[in-house]
Image (cartoon, rainbow, N blue to C red; front, side, top):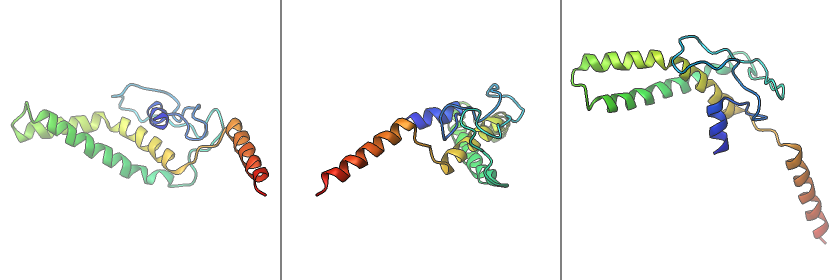
Amino acid sequence: MKTVVNILKGKCSKCEEGDIFIKKRGVFALQLPKMNEKCPHCNHKFLIEPGYFYGAMYVSYGLTVAEGIAIYLLSSFFITKPIHFFIILSVSAILLSTTNYKYARIFWIYLFTRKTKKESELTNLVVQEGTKETELP
């Protein structure tokens, strides 16, 4: 659950504290959000290699299709003409494009980077491994 909250907040996948994007804008802003090159907190590099975010386009496509289906189903109660469906779907796809761009990249980062363990987790792991060795004959 914490990972989902961090994705929605746009936090770094490694430290869960730094922001992935520089400036937070409104949901329907028509400018692409600007992304930090590195995490301001842990200095993790977001763009691992050239072309890294090409796969995020598929995620963005999936988000757009899911939104389109949801909007179609919700508007089918009120609209009967096919041209009105087309207009509503087109406008919603344009208005949500920057949000899809942002969350597709965040999801892609979370999909392919591992979270670093904090010092307290590492010391607990070392202590547990140390006790296991002493218990064996």
